[in-house]
Structure formats: structure tokens, C-alpha cells
Length: 432
Ligand SMILES: *Cc1c(COP(=O)(O)O)cnc(C)c1O
Image (cartoon, rainbow, N blue to C red; front, side, top):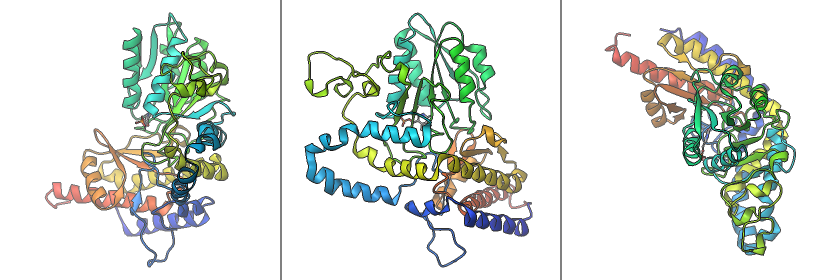
């Protein structure tokens, strides 16, 4: 059995010290349900006690709660239909520019907020393969998020294309060498995740994009698990297309609309398949046929989800103020700390780490494996400690840098340890 008291104490002391000196620590109090970490035992407990799933659904901000309430009684309640002229029509593009500047390394006029990630993947991937007529293949990897794979299956069937699968190591991710081995003159499109949703592997965006471009293939990056925790440099990496979720690290709220990026040079070349009135040159002309807008607006389809775009604005502003470089530094420190606790407490119980050891190859979450993790997660959720479970036996510890503290990380991993130990003792008939 792992020695507990002395080690536990030194880890807790470390966590408390880190929270005290954390330059971003003050942001935590701006999220609903958190509590400023302090040594005062009478302070109210955070709710939940440890939230380690900010990479799946970010905590809401108090600013967003105020913004949403004010929106209903203010802009919606009193400006009514005039709100479209006031600002709603431009909102998807304005937030896109803000996000591009704060977190994506994207110059203005290339990012928009649109439909769900799934629908944006479809629109941009379809536009990309149609822009490479005569090419027959789409490159993707076996460990990408299900919706990404399913969308490409559908497009391949629709267009008579072949999927070229990269079999990625679930504990690592897709490497430039693997991409080099499969892209060729028949490749229309390469679709990959920047940070793998399972392992947390951080792909080499710049090199992989360059490799695809040597064959004149287009590249679409899914940023769902990197935006808001890992700096992204879309312009610098010469990325063609990207999409990402806004309800994970951006705390846009459940079902908040996703964002898309289309490189400036491609905007007037690509034709997207969901030709709606909001993407036309003159929206209120209501003309007989579809005439696409020039620029990024062309990738919009229907009426923007204005209500769904309220909350993300406050998180994007926070990221810009904190700077994405500082957010990343804290994210690395949090995952390093979680790994230290895992090595110390959980490895002796047979838990293995399924995420990269080197922080340069790791995003904002850490996945650990053990056959009992499904049961561990169920018990933890019932006890107000929230990591998440990914089959077959992975438990993900996700730390949102602006809202997760070191003590919260400590509490969460300690709870995993205690629950797992209880299960193992039960299995061995109490002999352990
Ligand atoms: C979360 C996530 C999605 C979610 O897509 P929705 O359309 O919002 O359901 C897609 N792709 C990746 C890689 C994700 O992590």
C-alpha cells in the first residue's frame, strides 16, 4: 500500500502554495460554483467538490449569467427585431475576430461562429473535397472523435471517395511521419484533431499541415480540445480550415454554437454545401437564386444562434486578458501536478497513464487507465467529484486552466485514489 500521510501532506502543501502564487488564480472566483482556494476550513465547499471535466463542458462564468439576464430584459426584451440591425447580424463575425485574436492566431475576417461542430465539419470538409475535383481520398485517423469519422464516412459515400485511415496509437497521436506515409497526389483532404480527445496528444500542426501541402491537399483541423487551453497559430501554420467547440474550454454553455476558420485565400474559392440565405451577398434582397457572399460570411447558413453566443464572449475576453500563453503555462503545471499524483498514488494500484509524458506533446487533460475506471467514475459522480470516463477503461482528468485550482486537482485525484482503493480491497475480500 502507498504510504499516505507524509506524501499526502507534501502534495497538499505544494497545491496550496501553487494556488497562492498562481497569477491566474483570481479568475477562478469568476466561475459559478467555485470557491477561492484558502486554508480556511469554514469557507463554503465548491460545487462540485472537484470538477475535472471542464474539457467536456466548461463551468459558467458569473459575467455570462449577468449578460444572459441583461440580454433578455434589454436587447431582446426592448430592441426586439431591431436587435438584428443593432448588432446581432454581425455578432458571429465579431466574436470570430475576438476569438481569432485571443486564442487562434487568426487575423480578422477568417473566423465565424456558426452551427454545431458536427455541421461545420460537414460544411467545411465537403467544401474542401469539392475544391479538389478528381482527387479520390480523404485522410483521417482511427482514434479521432466519432462525429469527425462519421461525417467523413458520409461525405465519402456521397462523393464516391475513399477513406485512408491512419491507425494512431491511442496513447500517442498522429505524427507527421504517419501523414507523410499516406498523403499523395490523390489526397483531397486531411482531417485531424489538434488535441486528441482520448489521450490528450498534441499534434504537430505546423509540420503536418506542411506535409499535406506538399501534395496540394487541404487540411482541416478540429480544435475542440485545444481552443482555450493550448495556443493555436492558424495563420502561422498556414492552416486551410479549422473548426472547434465553444462549450468546452470556452464555457459557451451546453450546445453553444461552434466556430469555423477559413483561410482568407480560400474563402472565395470554396463553395459550402448548405446554401442558406444568411450566407448570401445581399441577405434582404431575397432574390430568386443563391449568390454567395464574398469573405467569411459565405460559410454561414441560417439565422445565427445569438442566445447561444452570449456566454462564450466573457470567457474569450478572459483568455485575451490572461493571455493564452499564461493559460497554457498553467495548464501544463496542472497536468504535471496531476501526473505526479497519479504516479505516486495510483500507479502502485495498477493504473497506467495513457497520455504523453512530455508536456510539449500533451494538451490540457490527462487520461489514466484501469479496468475499474467505469465503476470508479460512477462512484465519484455520486460523491460530487466529476472526471469523465471513456471506454474501455480510461478516466479523463480535465483541468480548465481559468477555473481549476491545484487544490481542486489534488482533491480530485485523492478521491480517485480512495475510491479505487476501496474497490480493490473489496475485490480481494478485504485482504489488501
Ligand atoms: C466535443 C467534440 C465534438 C462535438 O461536436 P458537436 O457537434 O458539438 O456534438 C466534435 N469533435 C471533437 C474532436 C470534439 O472533441
